[in-house]
Image 1 (cartoon, rainbow, N blue to C red):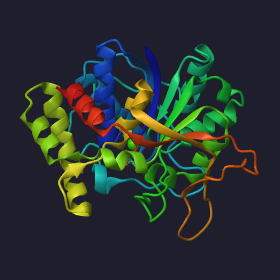
Image 2 (cartoon, protein in one colour):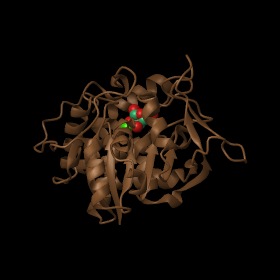
Image 3 (cartoon, rainbow, N blue to C red):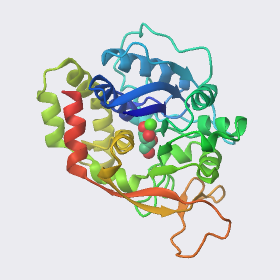
Image 4 (spheres, rainbow, N blue to C red):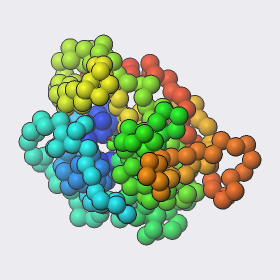
Length: 312
Ligand code: BDR
Ligand code: CA
């Protein structure tokens, strides 16, 4: 059983990821230990309420949800309203959840759970990395306390989605991402190069729309806004559910192929701030930076089928 502590900025693809994980909780494959939220697609308080809304729809009523960092470490906060709506769930006007976020902050929750279950948890981060960076600053021993850390973020050959070179989760807090990649814990990085080829196409969306279950209808409803934004920017009907790929690889790493490389975040540069750089040289990185596992390819069909099955 994979025991997951999720950090997210719910967000439409984050919401689909929650639905996917909830199905694995129901089937007994995953233990979703807790969720923390961070600024990014929306403010973390909104993200936390969205998380509760989605978990409750999926029948999970007792997963602790903690609100985390409201701003990045060294720049202004910015939200992704164009892609996720001002409410983070595609302007769907969903009712208030019945649960409420807990009292401790998301970085504190990360530390507490890591201390309580040393070496057992997978930390899955699918938003900006501010909460992880704060937790690293508060607890220097944190890198030795997780089984692994899976991060959706970064872009290499593919190019960025916020600027020509920066991917959103890194762009929202480059300093935090740099701390996370330098920390020396076992990081698996799922960049845009891996997520974009898994884009869901019109046929997949039609299959979801034809499904009658409550969860499938809910997923189709929140996806509408995201699909429209995707069509506007790329001219085809589809959607890239970045965060769900990171979740699936956490549960089943055999769906991916990996390259082990040191990764750095560019912190300066008018055009390059927030870009991720991987060192492809065969000799050791001069700064002694530990390598991270970068996902370079995945089983696209398996991803699409498993994601759909989890929503039916
Ligand atoms: C990432 O940015 C967010 O908008 C998505 O939720 C995903 O985590 C993709 O770049
Ligand atoms: Ca996200």
